[in-house]
Image (cartoon, rainbow, N blue to C red):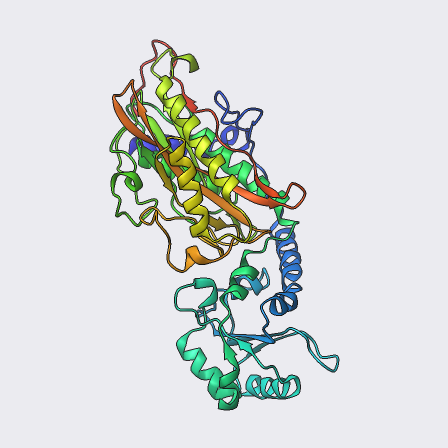
Length: 457
């Protein structure tokens, strides 16, 4: 663990924290990612609340789109409906008492289209009965789906409380429309994109610094050293994350999603061993801020002392090109309105026709790391994904194009997997999916000058 202490000492030096990162060879042409400073917490709250109000204003239109008259959500403190987190104010850290929301598609007699209560008495039920009697909705959507988290957040006990509170006479008006919760949470208003792009650039900058000789000392630094360095780096920049960074040595034990066809986890904890010269290394990494989450996977190569980019085994270069091609195939097949399963089938067919073997497991991102929307494959489900894969692909959302391609590397006489993950957004102007910041097209290189022997850590 002395190596980890050295890395953390470096992290908290003033020059390390405030110096912009430069790409090593360059992850992508023309990209020199730098750390992006977040605004003050007060300014962040104003931004997030503005985006929330924009999205809430879309709810009546969503109700009309799906033929629903009213949408009712209710929860207790620490037992929140999943949709609550997209409705709350930035300064709310949980539901309070009983927090209840009612939205109406077409209110009559000049009534508001939305109501909210924070209440611990019978007053909320009295008010609801009065409003429902006046508005007479013929359908009241509740979030009770058994499989979709963003449409199934109403707790069983709270459902009983709702029925008791508003009366049995409304029970036959209850309906389930899963796309209400899915589309509301999935929708990303335009003002979010510039900040999401800054967050993505910061994620790239942390990866490029972590996958460099500034942090990695071959033969000494381990996978877990780099993982924890990344966590500390995130913290030092006032960001947070939604999952533990992972660092895998692809030329070591390989990548679990490829090694085990039944594996259901995309990113279990990596084995911990020293990173050596000649290793191909991989990270799955994300940052969180402003109610948004990123998701990125990049690859690096550890050069032998004195080597340059010209000494990288060509098989590694070609492997990255192959997975870039798989990214293009998936992105081109992501047609609005198609289901995730339809996209998966079409993309795999095209990839196989082009001689590419691998796996595709893409998901919505943004509001949550694994956010609301259709799923395009899972590591253990490459034929179809039940329920989630049957949802339609929506516009105005963000997606993580997550996948890997297999490539035989002659220099190692073995097939190695090349994982990648980059986030995209829907661009109305081009009517297509575009990279939020870019994608990796060149390996990150960890260099050691000729004749230099790593010192004792």
